[in-house]
Length: 630
Image 1 (spheres, rainbow, N blue to C red):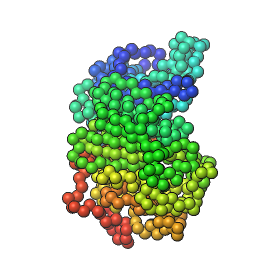
Image 2: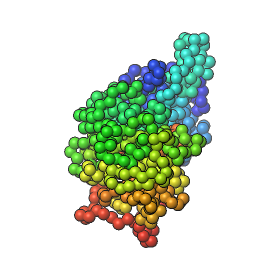
Image 3: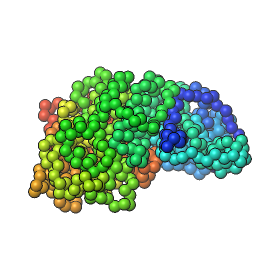
Image 4: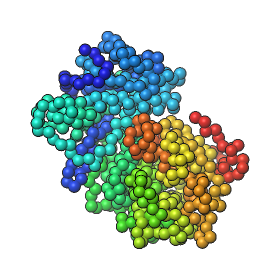
């Protein structure tokens, strides 16, 4: 009988085994292998026998999407009839899995798309996010319903559909132990026996289905549905899959417990990720089989410099001696409270045929755990500080995506890595540090450490004669208070750069909001014993005073600071296709920005002097501020 509610399925459809684009993620912990369900993307299927779940859409009012109409015709109206019985009308956020629609389509997830856009969806930024949400919710619902090979409609935007599915199916379970094996047979729907994704076993005594749609060690495949999809849809799907998988690297780096993500281990994880990409680049670029073993058991050795010639990437891991030689006193000051040695990671991507000779420099805050130091944080919520290297993680992820896509642009990632810990060696309030630039910094608050390591990182970035410098950091709780998880705070004096970042964020659904970067905030950072103080004398405008501190170390005209403290750790469902906690934002914005620069979609003003007036430096700032209404 046709049914639109969740039911236990007893029949199984057999499918041709496919290793296209397969990936296995494992993590060895204390000799115990741990595997968990992961998103795996494959090429366009050649027949319906290659999947056991399909995602289609429905617009507000009941009109099915293109693929929805096709499946409805093939099933003699069963899709439409069963969707109607659910009572849903196609509003955004609605999703229902229809079981047993036909032998060919055992599971069909129908997702609400809301109002049908008047313009082509590929040009409609708002609808792109609708597609991401719909693709994500449909794929997750099918996975919970037992589907292991999921085909997804492009919804006229293959990239957005792929991003939603791959991001939405991400889970972090690398630290979980093996699920208990059952030996009593007779699966009963609660996880006993050889689970089929619904916990409905066949009683052979060696299964480990857990009854919630996940089987330990199994893979969830997601793929573009239609073999006759346009070349644009297929290319978009591949692009979206690549970018989303890279963003998931940032998410996993952020989720990993800090004892497994020290500065040394962070560098090793990044080395492994680029090693895999380099060794399997041909397979990945052609969307064929490639086992992806990240996270991994870190090796005991770490090369200081590694060339990945297939993807035009050079990775350099700098140690304590190099940092000392460069006189990065602010960075070393933060690191000295920890027994873990600091690292300075450089990731250089030299895209072929770049039209821009100078590199885009990305500087990421890499505090792998932040206790606050001597100015220690409250215990409540401190565990989340394992993600205080979010800026570093996103820099790695963005360059990983650009290298995988071979975007013709030069990008340099600069990442100071250390822990901020209290100890007898730690810096104290009142101490003075000498930064790489020669400026002296009075430490007023040791919990304002991110800006200290960025000060040296930003100064070092100038040595590469960059086209643009962008730093990103989970820098202040104040930006979370001001903007929440909905917007990343952007500080820049360059109107054109702000426009490029805002456009990139809008297209990716990672929204940006311009914040004031005014000289008026500088007075509160004055010190009586040094050139500048690392914390404001007042309580207000914390995100703005942090940004104005960084500006003291910037000589480049085209610079922006992104405070991602609210958006990288968004866990309140703000982004429906980003489950759990660490989001990886703004990885896709950085990728979009770089692609725009590479294609000359984003161009510099023709004026020889690109030093744009600080729009918030005087009382007329509000008049000059461009509209930020969405």
